[in-house]
Length: 481
Image 1 (cartoon, rainbow, N blue to C red):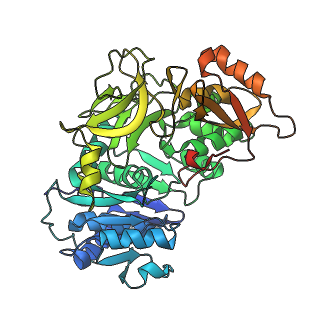
Image 2 (tube, rainbow, N blue to C red):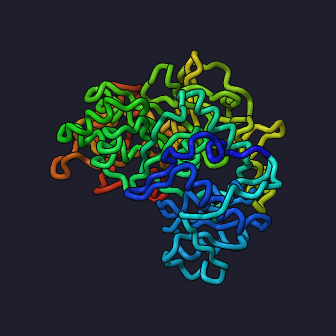
């Protein structure tokens, strides 16, 4: 089995691989540290990783992958009940953590191995795992029931990172900066393992700040990964931070993911810097499915085209293919390819339910597709598809229209039962000026003039803040009247 990280033994020994604040490791130092730790855990079962935004987390995951054992990243913000479920479900043999980190009670009965980032060992032992064996078990936030562990094989990590390298022209010369958490696919697989597979560098901010982004991009970093809440803060800061404008203007690639980036923020960043943010689309279970390409059109509001090796189709509720890709007809995204997970751990029922008989994964995401193949996601099937007056309406496009109104700072759209329409469209608004919010009729007219009359909100509710999770995604199930 080939290593996922050829640069660990290649000709890049003196290049900086990882930098977290003032601490860094070259490829030679990373190889030594990961090799030492891999020697300790090789041949065992799954290992839990206390996934703080530190060098230790990166070393722990690389060591597990080099040893051929599956890593289970743990969110340090998880409550004890959730941690208890994950530990009983995944049954790790040890927990890897930075020295001195205080672990919560569910982890205290587990054998602890402190991660030393200055290892003295040689190369990691040759693992017996093959490309189909588990690399990671990443727990998805359950909207119904406890989180499920998506088992991600080694080949999915390799194929998704290589497909992104093709789409983004990503090379060992690139230096990536981000401040994402390291317990999920975006921050860990793309943000740490991605640069290491290319032989490039990653600079982790520890905590996202616009000042940190400006500093790193003006000091040689070439790429920025973020989520929409981060890019919104960037867009808000551009008028008062000239160093940030300069930094973004000089970046090779600005990438947003994990949720849709409002078109309004796209346009503000492009107008100020001349650089367009590109979006990509993935899930824990599928890793990456589509992206705007570096050599393609950065079309705001879309997630680009399928990545190399990924098959994608839109289907109607009865499972039949959407008749035409006309940029208007909404269907559920289904995907197939080597980027997919193998199963939900210990959940054969959920695994079987997630796939069609011919191997397509049901994403639960609703989208339209343009004639040239670009995909535009309009929301989740469970929370963002509104059936009103005989129409199937995606919440995402209404949210984008609302955000174009100067009186709207944040917006979310849901549906609620309506005796006449089936469902009526509800807009949840955080106003720019809480003392003088835009009226419901004004917002309805604003949406109707941009989209279509049947897409206007029938009800407007005002909030001080929208409920969001760690990734900045709006938790729509928490929006109740």
